[in-house]
Amino acid sequence: MKDTAFYKDKLDAALVAVVTELSTIGVYDAVNDNWEAVPDQDISNEDADENTSADFVESWNERRATLSDLEREYRDIKRALKKIDAGTYGICEVSGEQIEEKRLDARPDARTCIAHMNEESQLPM
Image (cartoon, rainbow, N blue to C red; front, side, top):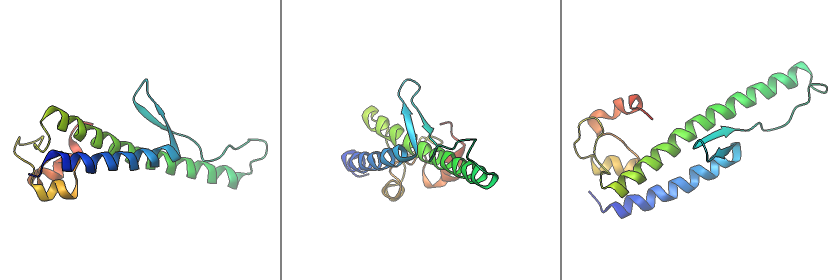
């Protein structure tokens, strides 16, 4: 496996990118270590017709779904950075074996080896 500094640099850059994107659709609550979506626009019940309200709800649901995906990515990156600090980076969370370099090159925040990559989404956040 490459030196962990290589992967740390990639993960640091990915973290900046995901935080930047998260910041466009949400706010960070440091107390709870949680991101919360914010509405794209404010809608007044007095001025809103049925179509405007429906568009607002649709947009709001899309923002929350996007934020959820980005927050998972954020947490995976943060977890990988903690593993680098702890000296456990690159170890499959299912088998305990070394994660293949080509997998880490493609996805530095990978939690499993190629053999167990289909199980990764079932691991606890």
